[in-house]
Image 1 (cartoon, rainbow, N blue to C red):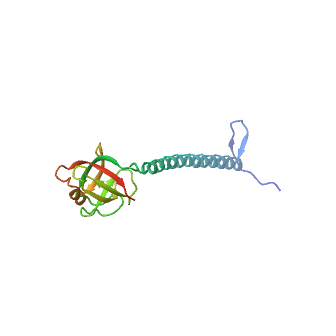
Image 2: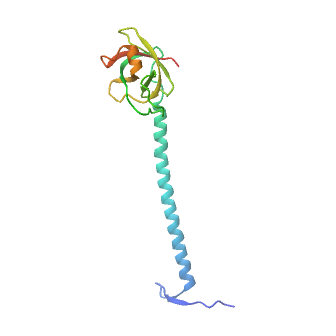
Image 3: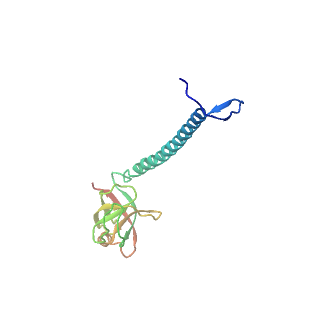
Length: 162
């Protein structure tokens, strides 16, 4: 038995179109539209994911130790204020800590003032310094032990201990 079809209108080719053929065409159009939206969202997500991944890889490569095995000479400064360090610790100016741009958190560095011969071992727990020409920021207590609080900036020798 044939299903009765409701005649709706005239197609572009001049023939009569039924309700079922219009619904079918609309369904195909809607599915095509949804598929193109899904494709666009997927491409955008992939592009953003690629950007995020490349920045993470770039940051990991920046964390390679930059000090030579025999030590290196660089400018050091000190800081005595702050809330939190880049490692998430609360800053304590009385701790023997330091900020370095590339060494991993927890790295211990022996900092020696070649002028006075005084040295101190500090632990990297922050990022910086962000002043051109300087390689390390030490806490104020470490600066006092090195004898650099008066001048604020001094040439020091850096040796990775651990």
